[in-house]
Image 1 (cartoon, rainbow, N blue to C red):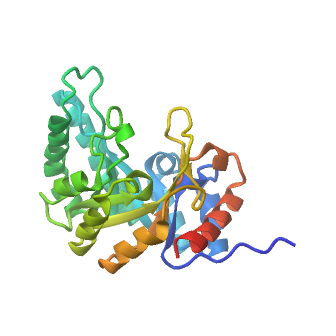
Image 2 (cartoon, helix red, strand yellow):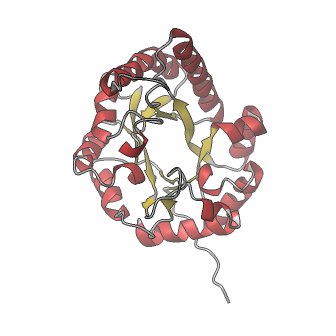
Image 3 (cartoon, rainbow, N blue to C red):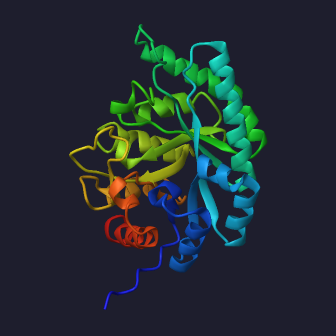
Length: 283
């Protein structure tokens, strides 16, 4: 007889993308059944359901929204593109406030299409310029901005902020209660400077979100859906968790997996297995 899935520990949060095959009501029910208390939400499915309705549903189930993903994509050169990005991010801040989360995760954006000068430093400065405008708006609504670095393989088309140190250098231009970082093990595990940066972020109150995903190879075509289930790859999750907690981090820990194989399975079973893997490999 198959044993029932374990109950989730208090600090565990499931990112909605891990089980995107579940509708929001299905996700809320599955979380309640497994004792999951935190959920990281994504804007697109929340918008489809209705932001106010989603907030009511999640709140009624006693769930905490640990993050909202995602804002960002600030690297357009043209004024119209920058204006559109800022407007969309103000909307994302408003959505986060309605959902009751204090953390909006930001992905910076890659080099603009057709950018012939390949100027990464200048693109990162455009991210800083956007944060200058967005941070006060978010702070007034009780929302922190968490800059997430992505693995360097995404620098060209998705995220010019490639290391935790780069993300932290951007964040430290602003008050800690306005701008910090989101550290995802999938993106930082390879970087020998990341442990120092993670400690620096946690000790200064800038580690606004900690996410877990494993690194497995070979990477799939397109590389976006290659995040492995905890324990299937090379990441030492206990190391990263211990490092963050020893530096003062006390927040929830999200598991965020983009994986076609997992999405093809029963979502409730994936959630239960993810809780089990969290207990086995991260606790």
